[in-house]
Every structure is written in C-alpha cells, then in structure tokens.
Image 1 (cartoon, helix red, strand yellow):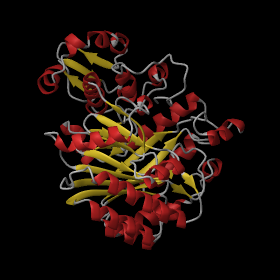
Image 2 (cartoon, helix red, strand yellow):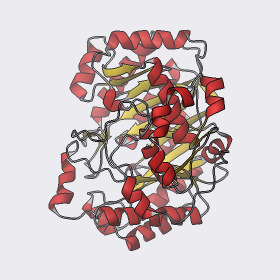
Image 3 (tube, helix red, strand yellow):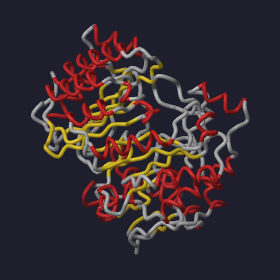
Image 4 (cartoon, helix red, strand yellow):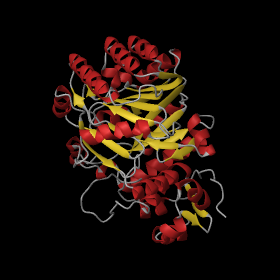
Amino acid sequence: MISDILPAPSHLDLDLIRRYAIPGPRYTSYPAATQFTETFDQAAAKTAIIADNRTSSAGPLSLYVHLPFCEALCWYCGCNNVITRDRASADAYISDLEREIALTVAFLDRTRPVEQLHLGGGTPTFLTPPQLRRLGQILRKHFTFTPDAEISVEIDPRQLNADQVAALAELGLNRASLGVQDTDPAVQAAIHRVQPHTLNVAAASMLRAAGVTSLNLDLIYGLPLQTPASLTRTLDDTLALRPERLSLFSYAHVPWLKPAQRIFEDRNQLPSSEQKLALFALARERLLAAGYVDIGLDHFARPDDPLALAQKSGTLHRNFQGYSTRAGASLYAFGLSAISSTADTYRQNHKTLDAYRGALISGRLPVERGLTLTSEDLHRRTLVMRLMCDRRLDFASLLRDAGIDLLADYARELASLSDLVADRIVELDQDGLRVTALGAPLLRVVAMRFDAHFAPAAKERRHAMSV
C-alpha cells in the first residue's frame, strides 16, 4: 500500500543524488518549452483563446506581465532581459503591453475574473512610480480582479523606494519576491550584483509596512566563490527577515544560451559539482531545521503558508511561475518572451524587442511559437504534474478522474522505474507510485521517466542539471 508523504529528511544521500542527477526539464509545463514549434502562429493563438472561453471548465484567469528592463546585467542571470538605464524605454514598452492586451481581450471573455497577477522580469522595479501606476490602470481597465486576488511582484532591493512601493500598493500588492541571491560581498562582486544586505532589510520593511503579507526571498546555490561558510551567513541573514517562502534555486550554468556566464569558467570561480551538491545539502538542512516545509525542487514555505497547506491537501499546482495554489486558472502572459497556457495549448511571445514590437504595430498577436497538446500529451502532463506536486500517482483515482489506466497503458514506463525502486527513490505496488522522502530531491528524474519527448542521450544541450 502506498503510504502518505513523509516529512523530508534533513540529511540527504548525496551519493544517490550524484548518481541520478542529469540535465532535464524543470517541468513548469509538459511538454517542456523546448518542444514548442513555430507552426503555432497568431491564428492558432486566436483559436486557442476562443476555445478557452468555450470550454465547460472555463474559469478564472491568472495574468503574468514580463518587464524585461535591467540597469546592468547580473552575470549569472538566465532571464530574457533588456539592459538599459533609459527609463523612458519603459514608457514605449508599456504602450506595447497595452496594444497586446487590447488585441488579446478582443477574443477573451472579459467577465472571467482575474485571481492572480504576477509582475516578473527583468526588474519590475526598474519602472518609475508613474509608470507602475499607468501599467496598473491598463490592467484594471481591461480585466476584473477578484477582491482576494493574489498580486505579486519581483523586487530588486537595489531599485526600490517608498514611492514605488506606494504605487504597487495602489495596484493591490500583497505578495512580493526579493531577489537576494547571496549576501556575501565577494560572491556579489563575482556575479556583478553588489547588493548590501541593508538594502534587503529596508525593502522587506517597506513592503511589510505597505501590507505585503507574503514575502518570498530568492537565493541561489552554486554561485562563483560561494562556500559553506558564506552560504551559512547568507542563510542567517535571510532567515532573520522571517520570509513566508524561500526559493533556493540551483545556479543554471548554460553558457551556450547566456554567453556572459563564460566569465566564471575563465576565472575558474565556480564550485565543483561535488561542492555545489554539498551547498545544496547544507542550505536544505538549514531551512528544514528552521521549520520550513520542502514544497518541491527549490521551494520552501512555512507550515501555515498556503503553499504548504496546498501540498498537504493535494491541491498544489505548477506553472511557469513555479509552484502555485491557483489551479484551474488559464494563464495569460504579456510582454517579451512571455508564455501563456490554456487547457490544451501553450504559446510564447517573440524574444526580441524588435520582433515583439513589430508584430504589435502591424496589429498581430506577438506569438513566436507554441504547442497544441495531443490527448497523449494531456495524459502525460497529468502524470508529470501530479508527481511534481503530490510526489505520488494513485492508480485508482487517476483512472476514475482522468481516465488514465497506468497499469495497462504505461506498463513500459512503470517497468523503467526498477532501478529507482531498488535504490528506494520510489515505492511501487498495485495501488500506485510514491516518491520517497529519500527520493524527493530527484523529483525531476522520476518525472522524466514519463516524458515521451525527453531524450537523455541527446547531444544537444537544452537543459540545466536537475540538482
């Protein structure tokens, strides 16, 4: 009989993780974004939006707005950004966003309520208070927000002042994520992001005073010059701010995509794979000891946080923003490289500003590529996402609720788990599959076994390491 999810052990089996960790998708979608094709064009996007309105399950909306501007490039960064100090460039971009939103809502049922809005980047706080207010007015003009809508924004503490916080509060801000990464001065200099911890403290204080009830702090392990001692100090600094959530991201070294990262190789500053794994173990152990719950992959939350409660109740959701409590909402994303998703489609905007703006000026949705999921994709997405969120597959409930007969239709995939069973990463019997507490850090590896598109032996470098 498959048992309930067990508390994650504070100590990891590093040899086991080392043996199984390979490059692979993060499964913020299934199929992964690497499978999107350019045959999915603006006509397909229109069809997807109209179909999304007509489905019997058409429900609330989740909005994402990508604000790509940064004053300087952080050398570790893998985001799609625009480096500039010209604040006026954001005015033109907000006009672009207004055009895209207007083109989209022409096909959208505007009575559908918005229950979630996330401003991401880049650096959303690159925008001035008037620009933030203008963006808020555009969003409120075209969409209807629920009274308890989750309004969140990514914050760079180096670029935050009281007037910006006031503008965000007018928008309804109640959740914020601070980009901390590391508080050690030497590490900050190495990654080209000098950020005294006093700025983090000041940002947290301003946001709390403005009514932010959920604060997330982003940290990264595996950065150049990072050591156990420096990471311990970073964790001390971070925990003193008492965030409701913490994201402990693995530094994704992808110099074939982000050439700026080559500087770390040139300077021989990166920790070895062994050292990086030890840093992960140290940080995870410390967060668990501080009372945080391991939500999955790189997310941690207090036991009374909605993420932790959703994990416990089996209602946790995963999308392009990571783990979420808002399942069932269609995601409409706006801006450069933004990815939207409906029940059976994904679509991504152009990644360059010229192409994105050019499409809008010509009156076209700025779609570069996307994917319409097959019935098999939908079944496998259910399996992958339930593994990523619940760490288990219950055969009876999947057959009853989703029409998925795992034992009959996925016998080959289940048989492929024999090595994971032998190493106690998963448990498997006639009732279902469960990822053990020992195997929790290898969630992505388990999910890969059900991914029909993933080719671990492929020579093309498309993914960062799974741990």
